Length: 283
Ligand SMILES: [Zn+2]
Image 1 (cartoon, rainbow, N blue to C red):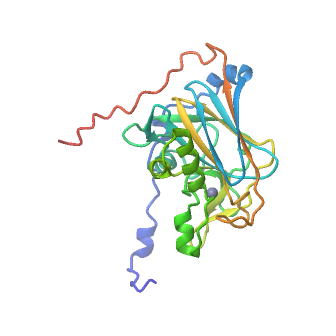
Image 2 (cartoon, rainbow, N blue to C red):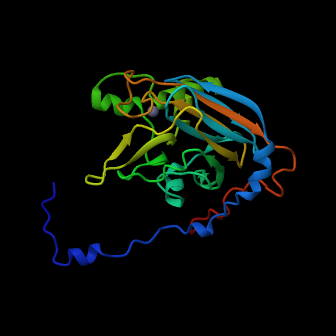
Image 3 (cartoon, rainbow, N blue to C red):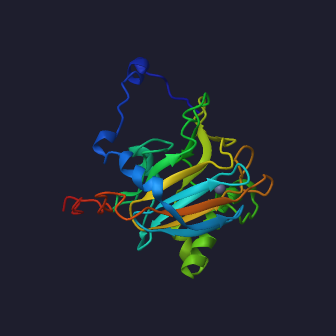
């Protein structure tokens, strides 16, 4: 409720020019040419099928590629990424959003949390790149939503639902690490919403979803900049065209494929070091 009087110079204040917060030309440049040779001749070395309303973990070595592939039906996925050698370094969706945009595609990077703040993965191909922005202001592959979770669902519906992406990722990570759920759960973090079509409503600026344009055969491809442990949940929302956090929507599997490029095909590429800030914080 707004009961605050509008100042006389409100329009003048609102007319300040928007300034993009971070200059993308200061980020490491995306050089598509450097991936061409590797992508042409890379070989699939592993695959993991993620069942509907469930999650799986997978590992990708630095210098390998991985794809998340739509199979059988239109389905969105929730992706977590960790440094495979140090789980405290993980995907930072908030900073990725600020450095790139609310939705990511080819050429964008997935950045890690502080203090690492380095590219964990680079998106090297996206068969949904054609989608762009639709008339509702929606795009695909967002880094604005978090993940469907049983706590929010309980708050809103007072039911215990156990196959939200948060729970799926928690179970999968616990199984991978052979640790209790309570030990795995704090590692689960805000996701890249793969294939999900989302935006903010133009009138009330609320987060919305609409049926994903993804179809079987579509995929998004990443280059692993560091050794990665991934977690992928096939969201109970299916294509997220109606509901989520329940069993009412048709759901389909997602396939993760890992590819090995030939030795030497990435030229002088090297895994990025962690961030160079000296961490003295003014002391
Ligand atoms: Zn979900």
